[in-house]
Length: 152
Length: 152
Length: 152
Length: 152
Image (cartoon, rainbow over all chains, first blue to last red; front, side):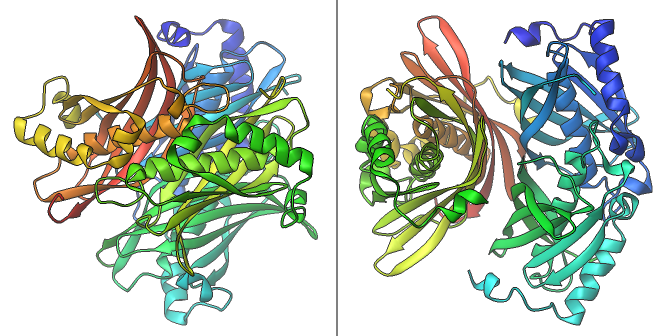
């Protein structure tokens, strides 16, 4: 995939600014306490620290919180490859919860698998991170659509 | 499906108590402002009022918030059919975001399609509700697993 | 959904001809022994008789055969609502195999849940049919894209 | 993942024999013309040569054929890690068709992402292969369940 050859180097300042501007308008991300951790062309990392406000009934991260940052990570990964004055919407995603999501924080990584003119497909991974230990707790796949119009 | 014949009548007080007890331990649901709206055997409704804390960059409900209540609605729908001293975990789900999620509130409906000894499959629907108007904004499918042990 | 109000009445002769013409060009459907059983606006039924050529290792219908007719049923359900000189491609689908697929035949029903200008979302159901007995053996959800160009 | 450390070396003769024995009982694989190409612990490759019997309406490989070998590749990848006298069933899978599936043949690769006592999760990839050229045409994710009983 051409996209992946671009990963592992930072995104341009313009792309970073567009991604961060949009992320800051996502009320949910701030409310959960999520923050943008890394922005590369075709790959975005979002981190969510552990706190009682994001748990399910056993004190693990709620699948909804895990999915929310996974969905945003994939959406912004797609967005890094879009031209100006376009925006991104999630069409659908599927996620497997592989293991209880525990740790100091969880980290979602969205990676573009295929970037088309209309549709983009991303891989979604979420890791539970405790100190040096990093474990894959969720894995998914997402379809996104590019829409025209100014990024609001 | 046998399960569906039981829907549309309220769950027993014991089942209601178990579901509500578990729901109240989900930090994320309280933090989002979600509330349990209806509990039937094999079907559960969860409502999430509109507020800036649950939005994406355009002010719509964030797909992560939509998914979070859909996931919980499906999980508790499965849970209503489980025996005592068991619990439920989401194995995976897939959700299509059909339309921008707008309204006074959104309402997730989880419905058991098939209830097995180990695995349960649910349908997930989320409606945007504005006054009398009710529109399907997301549709999904979820697999859950029953685990033994006291409901904590 | 507006589309569903049109279901349960037969499709127009023009739509039927376009669907059947395309179906007849699907080498796989003929090779499996599948046949088009019903064409309504936004809903299509495809039937696959039991034979050793479509089984998995226990003699049940193979998930691949079940999925193949489900995918085609959803694709043609979408296609019934498209204008002339367009065609349909599957973007993705997800399917749960709910029970062993057994019977004289299986029947896939694809139903349009949402029909947009670019994307269509379908529900997929597959039933195992043995005489009068009809059991849901698979349930899924599918995203399709409309593409321009003559239907070849 | 522990499983992946075992990949890239061949499976034991016993595992190979069990996998091939089961594969040979899948009537659909023979009928499509698919063959087992590689068996490693936690990873299986299945190849399907191009022929009119596996096409959709434009002459590409039908999504149903693509999915069928992807499903079997994932199922057997899981099966390589199972103890004797157990068997594998597909619970569900989701697949994105990324590009038209063309080539001399397509090759499905199923890889175990997580192997649990009850459930296994696999990644599914399908490549279109034309001479030296190899292109990812489908990507998916699958959940499987281990069942007890003699491998028939």
